[in-house]
Every structure is written in structure tokens, then in C-alpha cells.
Amino acid sequence: MEPAHTTPASKNSWDFTLMAITVGFMGSLGAQSFVGTVYSWWAHRTVPAWAQIGQPGFIDVMNAIAAPQVIALIVVMGLCVPKRLLSRGALLGVSLGMLLLGAITGILTRSIITGLAVYLCAAGVIQVLVIVMTLAGGRGLTYLSNSRLAKAGSGLLHLGFIVMALVVVALQHSAFMLPASMLSAVLLTVGSALAFYARPSSRAPIPVDSI
Image 1 (cartoon, helix red, strand yellow):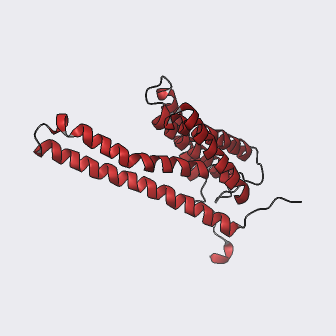
Image 2 (cartoon, one colour; image 1 turned 90 degrees about the vertical axis):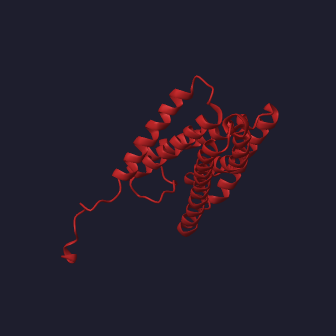
Image 3 (tube, one colour; image 1 turned 120 degrees about the horizontal axis):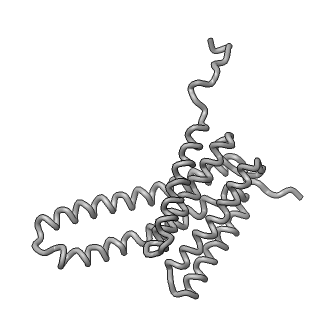
């Protein structure tokens, strides 16, 4: 029996939905950062001793607002990884398994940060597998592009975002923070170069019929 596959239309719809949710969370965090920066600048200039009296509470409020958004963004980023390797039905099972693994780890260690770190590591392992299969020309992977270089670039970009999220979530006070940050920068740079360089360019031959 052949494995069930989603139609191209449903795959594109699923890709677009995840992309829209990711952009929405990033935009929300960006808007919060902008508003918080403006308010902090205003408070420093107008409220006496605000840095000593008001700023600690302000930071706590900002963190409380941002935390659920960051957690949701990390979860969505994790869902973006196995969708290239699995059909939609299998994707649901793997995604739930990743979430369950992170939740159980967080409960056992009594640390949300550790749970998120384990979740990101699981997503990273799957992404590495996706990249290896992409470079090897494996079939069954779903991408919006047909170029192998663009596919590899997309995979490296996703892996770079995962490593960056891992730095933010779990490596702030670790000796691995700088190496991981450098690795993330390299993955994002190389991934961007491959993804954009491999796009069809205006230098493609013009069909004779169109002349």
C-alpha cells in the first residue's frame, strides 16, 4: 500500500498557514518591542527615578506579555520543520510527539526552558535529516521551489532559526552561547545565499516564440 500524500494545493495551503502565523507572531513581537522602546524612552525623560523605581516592573510586564508569544513562535517554527519530510497525517503525529516530549521534559525538570530546549533539539535533528536527504536528492520532500540549491538553502535557513531560538531560550548564560550564535549566523547567511541565488533569474534564455 502506498503512503498517503497530501495534494499540492493542501500542501501549499498548509505552508502558507504556517508562514502567516510565523510572520504574525514575529510582527507582534516587533510591535511590542517598538512600543516598549518608545515608552521606556519617554519614561526615562519624564518620570523621576524611573530607572530605579519603574523599570524593573516594566520589564516584568513586558516579559510576561512576550513569553506566550515566544513559546507559540517556537512551537510554530518546530511545526515548519517536519512538514517537508512527512505527509500531513504523519506530521500531526510527529508534531504532537515533539510537543509531548518537550512538555514531559519540562514537567520532570520543572523548567519550561528545558522543555523548550528539548523541543527545539528534536526539531533540529529532524531538520538536519531533511537537509541531508535534500542534498542526497531524496524524494518525498515538499518544497515550494524545484531547485536543489534553493531547497538546501531553505533547510539551512530553518536550521539557523532553530539554533538562534535555542540560543535565546536556553543558552543565554552558557559557554556555548557564542559558538551557537556564530553557527546560527553562518547557517542563516549561507541559507539565504543559496535560497536567493538559486531562484530563476532574468538572465534565463527568452523563448524564441516570444521574440
